[in-house]
Length: 419
Image 1 (cartoon, rainbow, N blue to C red):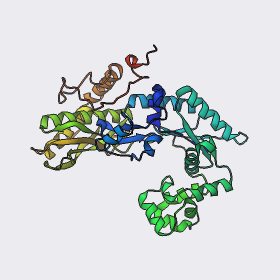
Image 2 (image 1 turned 180 degrees about the vertical axis):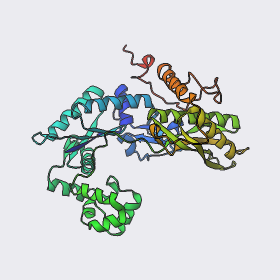
Image 3 (image 1 turned 120 degrees about the vertical axis):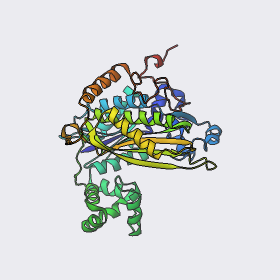
């Protein structure tokens, strides 16, 4: 049996743990630079505040309904996630951390266990030890565990946050209830295409021939169908493969016009990407650099552009990646434009140990040792202690986070003070 454990309204729940007055109050969490809504409590959802709502457009709604608004506090959310995942790992060694607030668990040899009670015990411990409410769905496959989790969350009063699909009757009843667009793995385009063929529920989907599914949705769709039928074909991904691309993109607190300001930002983004590459022991073969103006200021000149820079050899060196990222910026920069967003994406990622040599060009052998030293110092002393010359040594760029809560668990100066 598999289980999907999902933290309920995770970001909002993290804020409530350390600020109990927020319980039962509408809460929204904003994206980087306080741009748009990326998380909502149930109370905020009930007010009709949509996901992705631009904060400036809904400011009056927030004030009218006394909605509590917070900037993203990733140090806090990441630490709370780590605590939840640590507790889950004590119940079974087979765990796949799917996202910051979700994890799949596989229970082998638990045939004689009362999984519903077991789930309630897990839920009770997580709530007691972290203050985070979770919903848990048990089923014979990962996709059905997703379905069971949705039921446990939708009918939380009846299920007490735990639901087990352990019979054909329960499985068919769940699939007859679940809309086709809500099936994990079926995107918007596939769901619209299926609806044309009168396939509106997950139960309708499992009734169509395998041959048709494979032709229309490839082998991925066929695997999904098998999972919904109760046949486990998707295993846990305990050791996920390295990312195929790594991106660092940001919207600026204010518009930037000068090349030097943009250069400093692109340089910082390139260095962050290279650090992420080294953390997963990978190199990249190409870099994509892009810039965008503020599309909301339609009375001003609009411009966006991007360019792919191919490296002469694969690398994870901050010096090399930064050099080519700045060269790319020089080619796409346009004077007279007010830029609101920019980013760097490293692509063509390969493991460091499978690096192919170039007969005519190669990276300075000193870079490898230098990067190891930089990473060691950064880990020990913190970020921004050492910078490349292309970064402004006196300038510390910060995201616009005017509604940031305290880092209660990761900063000693911001822990809760008892009165």
